[in-house]
Structures are given as C-alpha cells and as structure tokens.
Length: 328
Image: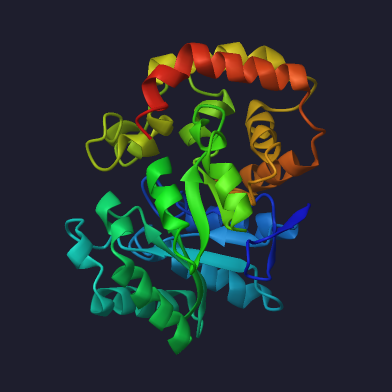
C-alpha cells in the first residue's frame, strides 16, 4: 500500500482508505460483526485512513471505529469525521460556535479520543463558504485542542474552490470517479498549489462502477440507492453520482471491456482514481472483510494505459457528461 502526505498536516495516509458510511446506515442492513471484521481487514492490508461522520447511524459508525481501535491498540490510523448534518434544516446560522463545539464533543465521546484528527464540515449550504466567521470558529476549536485539523466535504466544485481560499482548510472531500470528472478541470491544480489534501468520495458511484448491478437489481428500503434515487432525502449527486441509473448501467457496459485479466471492475475504477496525483486518498466503503481487502488491492494494480484512460474520458463525454458536469 503506497502512502501520500495528507496536505500540510505532516501526516501520511494510505492512498486507499476506508469509507465508513456503509457500516453506519443508509446502505441496507448493517451487520456489526461483519462491519468490525471489515475494519480489521482494511487495517491489516495497510489502510491508515478512515472516514466517518457523526450522522452515520447516528454515531454508530464512529462507535464501531472506536471499538476496533480499542481492540487493536498501537498506533491509530488517521480518522476523519464530519459535522453539520445533525441540523434539522441546513442553514448558515446553524453552524454556530455552540453547535460546532457540541457536535465535536459528541464525536470525541463516540470515538473515545481527546482530540479529533480531522473534522470536515459535512456538505453545508453553498452560502456558508462565503462566511469566514464559520472557519474562524473552527480555528478556535483547533486552538482549544479539540480538533487537530479541519476540512470540508462538498457537493460542488464551486464550493471546493471557495473553501481552499481559507488558510485553515487542510482537505477537501469531493465526489470523484470515472462518472464525475469535473474536478480534473480546475480544482485539482489549485488544490495542489495550495497543498490541500483531496479525499475522493463516492469512488464507485454508489456501486455502479462495481459492474455488479442490473436493471432489475433490488435495493432494500433503507438503502439510499432506492430511497434517494431522485434526491428525495439529500442531494441526488450522492446516489450513483447523480447519474440516472439506466444511463449508468449502459456506460458501465462500455467500460467493462477495458478491464483485463482477473481484475474486478471495482478495483479498476479505484485504480483509475489513483491515476491522478492530486488525489490523496480514495475512500470506498466495505461492509465485510472481502470487500475491504479487495478495495485495498486496487492500489497494487499496474497503471492504466493511456489508451484506456482516453477511452474512459470518451465514455464519460458521450454518456455521462450532460447529466452531471455542470450540475456539480
């Protein structure tokens, strides 16, 4: 497992991380034993970056991570959490000093630690990025020692570009995969210049890029791939990267011939992300040890050929771009 410097923090992290949304909630039924085993398996492969949030299972994901940390002992991986989605309704006013500290105190308790490695604002309203006082409140929490660093998790490239104007923003978590390529155009270069870490989230387009889904695939009622298909619960870009399901299936079939040998499409899709040096870490989810180990194996795949990279760009331009490019 290769490692990269995490922006200006002085820490190094594995280029494949562990996304802990799926072990918290909204991806169907969660089996805690399998979830704990998945975390152990990921760490055994050399994963040193875990991403979670205070709302994943209402803190359940954070608590599972704390349990694994206690079981393993030794040096802890870099653990990132998020804050802000506990608000009943998103507003800039909701990100008050009192609320921010309350959310962070709760995560400190859930993760059983004295200081959080990284706290990310969790897809706040776009207007928040034009309010420097919110970032000043995070600076004060760093001064208090409750958090070591902070960053943002964004929906739109516009938000990412605005966020990195603030000197305290150490990282940006953004949807990036073969079906969401807009960050390549301007954001990657500016983030690299400012030495901001980039966390590629939704790296498999909610599983679309695993190549395992069909038109008649059934999702459970508590799986966002069913209940948020049209953005009913949160931003539709979080589900299948905003790509209409049937369109995504068609595009996947165009990608499939590019996957050679015994490599899975999921590992190929993760390796595609790692072709971009600006990306610090990709955070696929895993709900069992086999998925966690398979995700980590993507880091050891050989580089994707220039011709295959061009073909993926052509597939994006032909099938996907009109649906997502200007929206996010």
